[in-house]
Image (cartoon, rainbow, N blue to C red):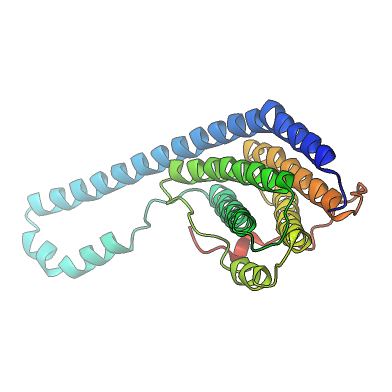
Length: 262
């Protein structure tokens, strides 16, 4: 490890303080407001759908009541077709786009939790040789923050009537598993964690340009710096000074279009 135990512990304390004093409150406020807006839109859509179904059924009843029973029976198949082909309640395209980002983000946070947990377990089992205690503390701290981020994204998805994302990113998981099989020491583990954090950070940065709702943008923007702080500390661990980049790259960003359908 290219940083002293004392220096790493100090950076972990600073990371946790900034997260709980600045990033977490901003994320929670944004996620809560976003969830409320999505829930309101969902309620409005469902209310409109119920009204349309009621109007349709009243129209059919009036036709039958007017003495057109035979005609109605003869056209039962067309009535069924009309009813089944009517559009199912759905949210606006912009909201669905934002929810795609939320789902992808949740899967990336789950991947971070998964990778850090595997690393912590391997370190505690003595499978990585001599691991400085502060490295485990950092991994536990980062994992806890990923859990908080993932919970926020899933709360937003549930507000839209969508299931919470409990799986890890399906594209990256096989890659992480393959790379983790080659991890034998602290340096290897830090390199793998750094790769995951960089992908997450760049994905958030890229998502800011994809999201449509201002509060959704604020939520992503409140999390992205935390991922980059994780990356900065990991760079210190590896002895690579994290020089700021005036134009943060997004070449590693995961495209939201890859994440299923909502």
